[in-house]
Image: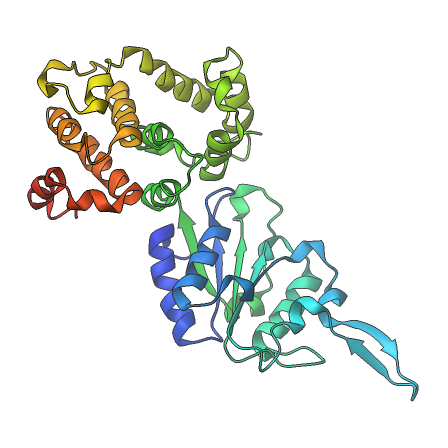
Length: 343
């Protein structure tokens, strides 16, 4: 198999190839929930393809005839194939676009044969694809037991093969822009990064970046204090990961009163520092939520007392993503020169 890359590395490898050579076709493989589909959209953005010119096709949802065109008989007795709208939007003259073909390794020989033809010839019986249309594919690996089958050898030979692994930095960069994901949740996965993606095909529920995102966004906030929370989380990520997440949330009971820190009026040295490492991560996440230009000097002075430099780094990284103007504060200008390698 190909060299394994993080999501960030894969984007920065594949995008230049597809930008330089529109006829190059990549296939991205990885475990379920790792973010294969998401990076296809990131690659399209890097190339400069607008969202309304991206078509995502789950190839197994269609018969191969849906791509070739439905046949009909003309008055002269000839058979013609009537093109479907989904591919005709990429016909010659339509301009740049991207066709994302999902689950190619899980598709039938008939589907793979059709795809091998259009990948090579870049045309259907009715029209040619625009020269600026890119094609990219995704799929799972054999060991994922997701219905993957050996791909046809001539099709394999025509593709650029990439395998991706979990990438905490890429997920954090995305999650920090989502208003419905709490920074405390982001801090949890920074504390336990190995839980970001631990897919096991023998389990029904697995901790993956997709599963965690659903836990963080689909469970009502009121359930966070409910006795049923662990059961709800376990239904999505499994019992072990759920127990760790719920234990992390319980650490909030150890957090000191940060009211005066939020007001910016506290003596930073008078506010206690949690004894447990998970609680310090959780506290930093909470402070990201509340930091502003009024209290940042007070909060920064408090965090400077933490022994874990990575917590301070993560705090600033999340904060400037959330509020870019925080880079103009005196607290940041004092922090940044000491950590120039990081920023």
